[in-house]
Amino acid sequence: MENSFLVLDSTKDGWKVHEHFKNQNPCDIAGGMTVAFDPNNSDRAYCGTFDNGLWKSDDNGLTWEKTSLNVPGGFNIMSLAVSHQTEKEERFSKLFVGMEPSLIFSSVDGGQNWENIDQFNRLPSSSSWSFPPRPWTHHVRVIEPDINKKEYLFAAIEAGALIKSLDGGKTWIDRVENGPYDTHTLITHRKAPGRLYSAAGDGYFESQDYGNSWKRLVEGLGQHTYMWSIAVDSDNPQNRIVSSSSNAFKAHYRDPESFVYRCLSDSYDDRERRRWALANNGLPESKGTIISIIKSNPKIKDEFYCLNNKGIYCSKDSGTSRNILDIPWSKEYCLQHPWSLAIRE
Image (cartoon, rainbow, N blue to C red):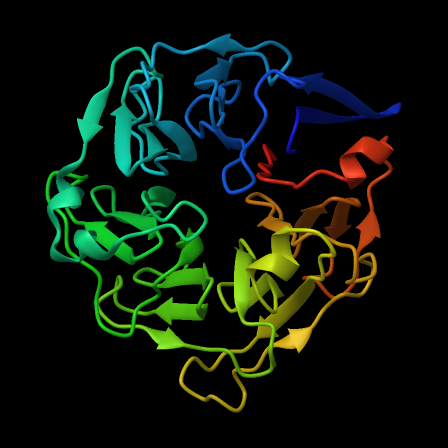
């Protein structure tokens, strides 16, 4: 959340809530905390903060220790990602940390040693990158290691480009024409090699060829084409759920109004069948709800989670309906912006 980090543990006696970093590291309204689990080490989790460094936990989030990442002066953490592809003999998956100004750090040993990745700042489009609330700078909003190809790495610069590397970050390929300009969430899917899903400030985009070409798909969204989060069913790459609003101010700031849409289609090219439908059933009223973070359960098909300032909601029927989780939710959280959500299992 905006002013604290919550670890929620489902037990036979109900939900246990462990709160960390409370008021220790206030999050910038365009920054926030990020969290990621290591798929190769079931107890390891990472928490990136805007202005208080990178932290790690080896006991499912009960205790936290600051990592050795020495964030340069004037830089802040904006994104985290952990590689899906890891050799069995490796103790940790490869970790990526995105910064503002745009820079990526990577570590293969759980955050003890770091490599600096900054070659992408020499791409032709870099001269036009600029983040509207802080136009003098820009940042790495998203890092997505491809789930099927180990050396394929995608990064979204906010704002200005979605770029890719086919060699683990050594060299980079610039944005392409008609691609997303302002990606907020980017994901790949194990059952759909080559497909990229982008929820962006300039709409919803998909690519079928690792980002060589893109289609902007917004039929059914009406004016709600400011996209923030996307989740795809872990078992069905056609079942997509997105969070959206009419613009950035309605999504994030005072007097918010946000929506959730769903698309379930087996036809990528048929634009009439490829339409979004409102899927707010079980969620709080759109007015007053800050735009949601949406995640699918990586282990259970048809299961989705939705986090916003009103609570956490779960769907077990592919996003058709939802129930609020019976988690203690203080009035303080209702006034805070949610920034990140991760599901261990």
